[in-house]
Length: 76
Length: 240
Image (cartoon, rainbow over all chains, first blue to last red; front, side, top):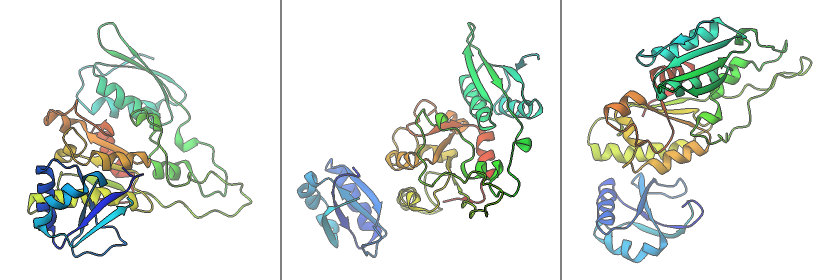
């Protein structure tokens, strides 16, 4: 995982992170929850990453949680 | 010397008694009998950490015989006058845990090796920064909402790898062992710490209680002596 890029989602609140995690799991999408990288800013301390191959499905799954930012090609 | 028969003794008595025997018998060969594989492993790990060599042989009745060859006691180990590095300092930084005890994987330390004794004529190098022990007593961080506590633990474990210096050991006790065992979402993050040379240890009694002795997926199993020993040696303990 560390060698490849990921799609990273930033959220406004930890409640949105939890809702997004539940939605992604319900959709069968593998995710990784990480502390928000230091170089990025967010009001919430946690972020979610998924494999780029799951991007479209993940965006749809978390739409209701209104991620504040989606970053493609993020390198862990 | 008569064999030390530790069969039937509860954990961690055999380890404690072996430690005393090693310290009391430098340059000797000790024969130890035990009837549990976990105690065999714990005794061997502790003996190696004291500089002894260990040979383990299974006996026909299912017991184990350990042949422990002790070395020179630490207090009389050769040191160079005027040098700042000592066996004790080196051991404090790394706990003297042999890499081979870590599930057979050689440890790769991120920090440079601890300074060796320098010639007496050279000035002392700066001492290495001592490394902390991390004591994980639960599978969540803090008291309050368990969902939030779970997320905070994820963040905590994934942040540890960024510390400088890295901690020397992460000890999982009570419900903390849920993090190192089958079903945990944090095994990859903990395995990453192990790859950095950090010792990962789960409490054997706790694994037994939760019926997870055969479900450990990262790190080694230790007893209370191992855990207290590491806490005692660490210059500081981080508790999430």
